[in-house]
Length: 381
Image (tube, rainbow, N blue to C red; front, side, top):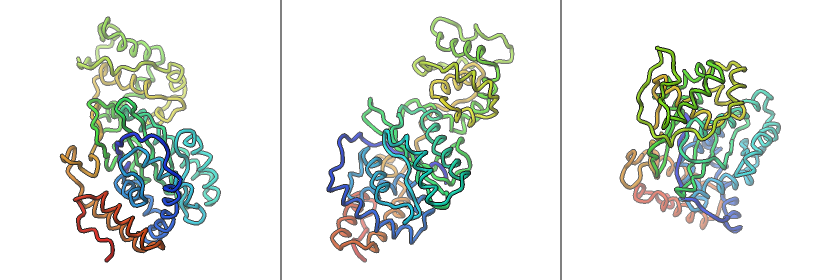
């Protein structure tokens, strides 16, 4: 299993009321006890990396299931109520300034778990590279403002982060699972979004494989050469693209591109530092300190427009909200995924050590969330 998907949600202002947070915390502990007992910490991490399960869990705990607050409130509640030493699972990071504490949180919780320094460094890298990929390798117009790395006492992990698009009034949530082949090429198992962007730079796509492979070679041309090439793209209105090119083996694709996609600024110092570091692959370049989206975009455009490589501009969306959405676009409803989440959570609610009233409320919330797709969900067997 790979990068498990993303979900667009309407922006939600304000804070959750105290009474709601208190109720969510009270319900989360007994439900987590059952989920971990049934599936173990690794099984729970796997399910938290599923956008639909995460959304259904938020609904079960009584929070508004279709707003950006789902992500920040639910992860915040779980971080404060789920004791790492008791449950064998911990939450690092959070919203805004708290996201900057991810590394220190990982160290504190990792020490409680007795994880090795090597494993803690691996978790640091996971936190760093997942954020880099969803902000720079995939450029969909959402700026990350929330990041949580969830990990177990065995070092297994899941990442949940969220980006903000103020112009469209939406947030997009990204889920990751440790069950990946690599961080770079199509790590998604499902991307869930109500919005499909017309133009999204996606360097994780298989269609961008050639571009990823040539970017290190472009950097090896030297900072001066790269700067001239990028400036040739910026000056495209006044200057022929090929006027800076002398080599006969370079291909002009005559790509009819929108000048608006050009990078607004490029960090020339970073290009020099990467050139001197002699990095060999795209992942190392992406992970390099202070490497940002504009510089990555500039390198990708040089590769596509000057060297003729393929580059994906398709939004890597796989499912719309509620596993398909009203119109079944971009994918039909995933009935099995909904059934699985419903069964797991309804069983956990029924077995949890909470009052009958709370059980009924939670099951009603779950049934409301599932809507017409799970009409057979019962309150009690």
